[in-house]
Image (tube, rainbow, N blue to C red; front, side, top):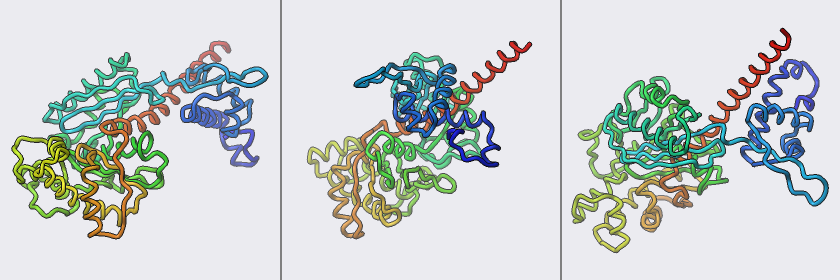
Length: 416
């Protein structure tokens, strides 16, 4: 807020001028990042600041490299005004999507503009090997972007499961062997040498679709991902909802599913509904219907599109089970939209007719459903959405503090 517009009184007097300058600069920088270049009068109008305040703030931020001139505005008459933009090159963000079979990475500047992307096979089958694999992939995507490792301001990792900040580990990541050991975040931070955020992959995919994809402008929606695992990202009132411990959306543990689960013998941490809906369940049903193993869920859906009756039986069974989950989502959350993704979920066109028929038998509520716009990039785009916000904060504080420190030293030298 502009200090000149604050009402007089004890509260106003208690706010240090340096804090007001910082608040004004951050307000202007956010405006430039979110809405693009603007002139000083436009910034004053949009942010509710006086023009002298904007002039001083921009001059200070230009010296520290946070903003830069980017040409003059086009006006029908009079002298064009100088436009300013946030400098997106002062930091780099890397988003990482850790899946059972693939690592997907994206490097961007602080405006979210893509610098490089990389998909690599996830061949790691232990936590230590996966830490090494991730750190090497981050180094590779950074080098492809033409950046040194030290240029990475923030890295965001999307993973199955729930991050436990107390023990700095991931819980409930049943499909990533060894990934749940304590101290995992410390090992990653040491290898990456960067600020690090770890979040649930379904949460990040929801944020990706909210920011860049099918759910832009939607305040109440869920992102349902069905692939190697099963997860739900919840967006309520335009914000991610994680629950008390971060486990909101771990719908794989719902006790839904008629067939006996193999989880206790093969993986005791895998939930009953995940066992009934994930990609390997589609394969099991197709094999039971007579398709020849080994096959993948993707091959089952391809065969169903070609009219294979065995594959169609497996798809119908998947859709019927999925309808039970959707009925529960509708009853508990009543979302405006359900966005579906993941290797299985992206076949919504095949699943939806049977789901609709099954839902008619389960509930009077009807969903609005769509596949995500971002496809396989949903998680990394959500990681970037979080990463650029946190990187901007880091860079703002570092640049501003560095600029203040330099100014203080210069003042001391002049004084002496």
